[in-house]
Length: 386
Image (cartoon, rainbow, N blue to C red; front, top):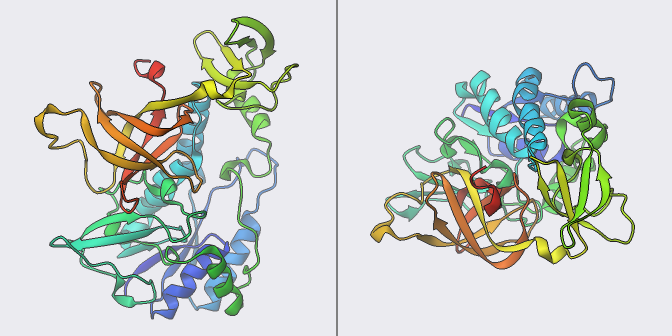
């Protein structure tokens, strides 16, 4: 029997992950990570219900259950990251950073390092190679999924393209927690299969809705929260096509690239197409196509298994053909990955014109959309030297 720590959230996904682990003869220790809204706020959160559900599922399988309080770590890292990015005109992704800094960061530092494996309810898979030959186990129901650590491991997309969560975990530090130590029991299942397993095994949360929104907000309105922490800073709204002022905003941090609603402008629809942070000007246009580009940049790339920038021959700028995703959705795009003269900044030339919002993550895959190379923060060309 392996020593496994399972992150149990109270939702159906991690509960079915527990069921699958136990059905293969494992008996993991279950941990609920407590973060929740700021303790100074009176807003309600679902943590009490989450804990009740998680505790009940763990008890059903006779597994140890423990609550790990990472509230301070979450607020000091994930929330501060989010507010800093918003203040500086970026579109942050707290879910990516929660996985990076909390689930596969602070939890690992506090508890996870004691275990052979960390299991989660994420929709993702992985594949291992020994001497260049695939050693993957196709279905998670076999105990021999646990292969030697010297195998070369890659994170791969989930079976369910809609629920796939590789983009949320591609930023984890695999030097701290190797892919060999992470297991995804439900990665080879469709969401309806997960629900069916939960119902057939009478799990208390079988029909519970999936959680939505940002962890630290609870039921707080996002703009209300930003206003509370960043305040207001009125500035001009400019029609980028005519360079005429057509309105006033109350802080560029209330607006994101591509936003259409909430601008309070007549004669629309208008779209936010650019934000000049230095002058506090929000630029808009009626032509949403003007936001689209066939090339953009990614920086601070986190490589999961191999750094593709190493050993590029003949001083070529071209690295390889790739597939990539730019947001949490099933859409996958074709592109070319290119070197630039900037350290740790790569260029992507894509077949399909798309909207780029600074701060979003771009997840990189091989051209067959099988192995995940890693992820990086998207930036427009105009932002490269800022």
